[in-house]
Length: 125
Image (cartoon, rainbow, N blue to C red; front, side, top):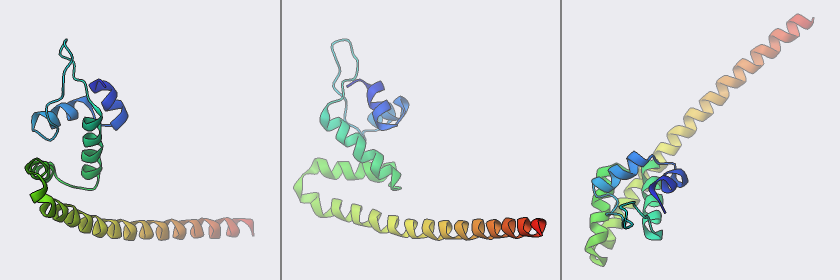
């Protein structure tokens, strides 16, 4: 799959995909005889994982360290698991904060809707 297709499918810009490859987050992508990047299934799964982890807030540096552990093999399974568990804990905290924010926004919107209804009722009387 060409980089433009991966970009469209993943929602990541072509520049971001190239950057991730440049810094080693994505391993060097196979190229066609004419030099065009040709993403394979494993590359696409890695892009999806990276996008998911970035959305969850994992810094690029931590992802690089994570994939370095992957390269080292099964003896790093526990360390990789700990990275993911730490991120999950941080995400749960962030979600709770976002839920509080959403609850406050919903409350404020309800206050304004009630104020509008009150004004409309006053005008109707």
